[in-house]
Each structure stands twice: as structure tokens, then as C-alpha cells.
Image (tube, rainbow, N blue to C red; front, side):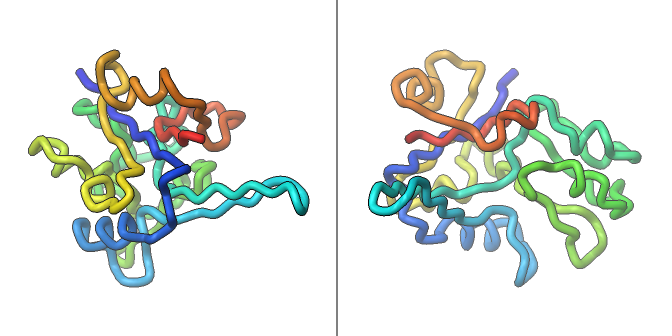
Length: 179
């Protein structure tokens, strides 16, 4: 069975927000909320500065604290692709998962349940890429099976320097940023 992940090339990302709009449209995310967003990080001291622009979302961790703290099982690991999902009708809106997520990747939907990126699992099951990946004009986003040694995501991880966000949190995130 697959273990889905995403690789984002920070050299190509221009922060255009097409991924954010595609996600909101595809998943009917209410206005004022988002499942993914653009972050800009500047490092160094002037004049030796570097800037990284990247798209962020739920990291679909291998060790997801949001799943272990959920009292109802609404937050769970889906067998297909081993992605972290939320079953809306099981969620009681207690926000334990929001508090446990080090990536600030969840929000309370106006209908009372917690929502987040799903890697557009409904699209992936049809053989399509997540909406964010499919619309990226710079082609900086790659999606695939991290357990398939021949997948494009693994080829990129084997040939390019990369990092994850907050590795010290111990969540083993599956969003990788190429540098």
C-alpha cells in the first residue's frame, strides 16, 4: 500500500497562491479559511540574506499527534495512502487535535468540525494529483508514493538537499522542501 507524500521545490515557488485558491475551490473551503497557505522565511543578517517561499499544509505525519489525542477517532490515518484525515461527522470540535499540531494546519470549520488538508484524497483515488499540485504554474510541487523507490518524489529526495518543518517535534512529516 502507498504512503503518500509531497515534495516542494522552494527554488521554483514564487508565492503566487494558485495552490491556495485551487484547494479552496476544489474542497469548498469557506471564505476566510484555508487548508494550505504560503509562508516566506528570511534567514541571515543583512546583507547576507536568503529567502525561502513555500506552500504549507498538514504534513500527514507518520507519527501524528492529532490522531493519538482525538477522543472520538475522527482524526485518523486512512488506509489508502496512509494519510491523516478527519471524519467530520465523528468530530465533536474539542480542538485537541488543533492544540497538538505543531504545524498549525487545522481550523474549526463554521459547521463545527475540524478541517484540514486531505491531499485531495478524492482526486488521488481517481488517479489525479491533489488540486494544489495540478494547478501550480511553476511546477514546484510533486506528489507521490514515498514507499515506491522509483517514484518522482523519491528521485527528488535522493538527488536534492531537502528539509522538513519542525523535525524536532518528532512527528516525521511527509512534506519535504527542496532547497
